[in-house]
Image 1 (cartoon, one colour):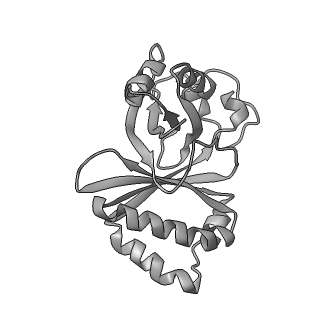
Image 2 (cartoon, rainbow, N blue to C red):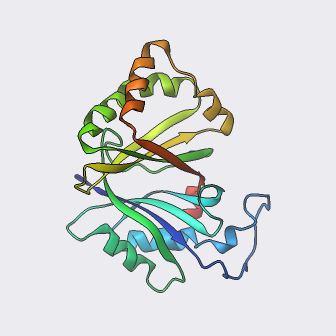
Amino acid sequence: MSMPIYHYGVVEKPEATLATGEIKNIDMENLDYKRQIDPARLAHAVRGEGGIVCGMWRGGMFGLATNQVAILSAWAGDKSPMERFATALDGDDAAVVDQDEYAATVRPDAPEPITQGGFHVIRWIRMRRADVAEYTQLCLETWPAFEATAACRCYGVFQPFGKGDVQKLLMLTWYGSLNNWDVSRGLEPGDKAKWARRSEMELSHWADAGRPIDPEDIG
């Protein structure tokens, strides 16, 4: 696939959805999974419209609600991924409550399936369009030491296609555990100036977090 268009969306089931069905390996996190869209069905529908499912995350951890599922997919062709994603949801009692289309910046080079356990921080970064190239280059330069400190990896930074002066980038980072996230807060002395410059360019940022859905549950 050349120059894919990435689509990030949050799919929500009505809060009144009846919690029916079997819970396997019941624990505190999966009690409300039955109020979420069937991930295998959603993945199958996206693939049927020509999309590649990169990863899916269940709500209920931080930011995303228990009746929500987030999905990152990649698409080729002239037709808008938003249109094809909407077609994939036809006939399902669910709605897209947040979505946009993106181009990958310095990562990933090509759509990659997300297979690790742990959790992902889904970070939103507002910055001036003119700063994106410098910012993402600094990301490349600071990631090696950052990723060496703990079990963590930045999957990618995605830039929306909007033409406004200020844009909202999507950054997706995997951590093996919350402890790995805490460990990764330290900075290599030689990178501190680069991190400071990154911070200068960020007008604001905030984040959601979710556990990736096991690829076996997506199909």
